[in-house]
Length: 416
Image 1: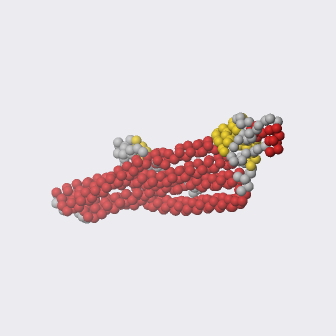
Image 2 (image 1 turned 90 degrees about the horizontal axis):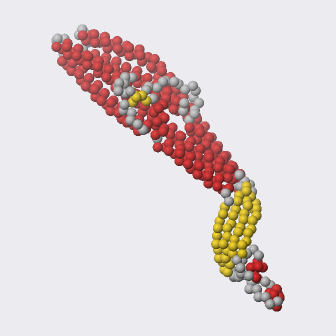
Image 3 (image 1 turned 120 degrees about the vertical axis):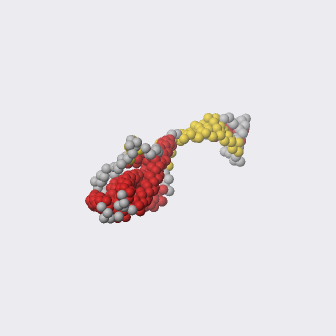
């Protein structure tokens, strides 16, 4: 491939793929996923902190504990007057609870959050991977356009030499003006084709520049090496996505198991108000008092047992569905890789004959030029031979670029 001398900075396909991945807006989702995971894990870990609630209340009751009438009469005969507990009650207090054991629920929730983050990251990787094929197509499209431009320039140079020859022959009376005009018309046609190719090349470079985030106008794209993968084993990011989904379902199943276990916790209550825990004292006096209560609580919600069997079945079905999706993907991926491998084998066989075809077309063209000088053939026959040689050279270069493109598409199919 002939490149302008001013294109000094080089850019490889691997560099393009790395730059495109880094520049693509979807890459920012990785950081969002990590930030979200950190926040959610922090919230789950805070579940082990004591829960404190502060309250103030005032109530009015129609019934309150009272002394029995005989006891009230006895107290009255002793000269004491007891009003009894008031119907208006009020308190200012705080309730404290602390989880001692949650049956593994917090651990299961942490596992779910990590699995959810892994799935989101794997899904992002799959989305980013789809960008690679578009970059590969643009990269090899640029190489193909540059090869076409180079070949067109060579053909124009050849046509210009033949046009000068025919002009000289016309001046000497051994050729007609129409012969020179025919070659000149072909030169103009080739220049139009060259202009179209340059426009397509500029468009491809602009699109590639958008993907990698920099101007590619003055960058020389380096033709990559044609190294075939060692095997057809897939390493695609979709496989990590399927594994992440399986782990997420397993984590959800672990949380369902944790719901079957009893939970233990410490609790405490403190309030300042009326009445207090000592009801007799509260009936004898309306003074406010400080009251404290603490204990350990064991709870077991057996409702989870009713649906656990069905939830296990649903989890098993979900995992089986993910595994089936993975098998289908691997099957299709392998079929695609095998088809690409056969295409590569076919191109190699075709390329083996390209150099011989180009050489033969060149011999025929040179012979036609000699025959034109001797008046054996006309310009139309020479033009046909030039066109055939140009097409053979362009086809040979196209086959080489297509071979490299298909090898890289095979690598992309397998992520190798």
